[in-house]
Structure formats: C-alpha cells, structure tokens
Length: 115
Picture (cartoon, rainbow, N blue to C red):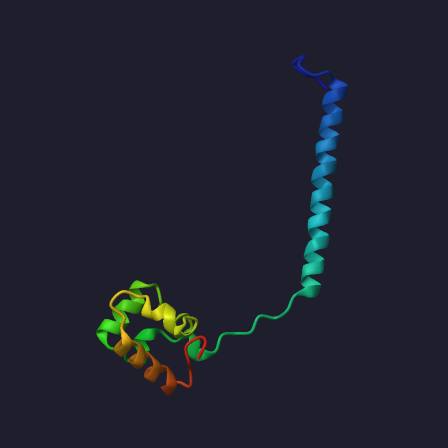
C-alpha cells in the first residue's frame, strides 16, 4: 500500500478495514430489520372503488367542484377524509355546498369524516 505520507500504510489499511467492517455490519443489520418487517407486515386494505372515484363523477355544482379542486381534493376518498369543519374552512365553500356534498355522498352510501 502506498500513501502520500499524510498517513502511514498500516494506518490506511486499518482505517479501510474498519470502514468496510462498519459498512458490512450496517448491511447485515438492515437485512435483518427487513426480514423482521416482512414478518410483522400487516396487509393494507385496498381502497373501496367509490373512494377511487373522481369528485367530478359526483355531479356537484361548479362552485363546489372548483372549491374542492383548488384545495387538492380530487377523489371521493380525499373528500370523505375531510370533516365538516375542514370543508367549511375552504374559501367560497358554504353551507349550500356542504349540503350538496353530503347529498351526493349519501347517494353512494358514504359520509364525511366524523359523521
């Protein structure tokens, strides 16, 4: 082993071995953790088909639809994850819009969070 003189060859090999050892230990520990996680893994339930439906398909009025989309609510799943209070905080989304959303959700046997 040749060095530039800043460190002697024995020290360079010793440090390289220590780095390699630490990296290998980290790899083996990560693999062991992955195996434990795999054993403890709980299946994630598939979303209901209605939750994947776009809010466009609810036949909401233009005002309600635009308010929801401006807030990033694109699917029925996004919508039912919101509470009445959260929806009422959306600018230009009032009681009539809320009632309209509730009616459309009820037609699909769905409700807002907390109802």
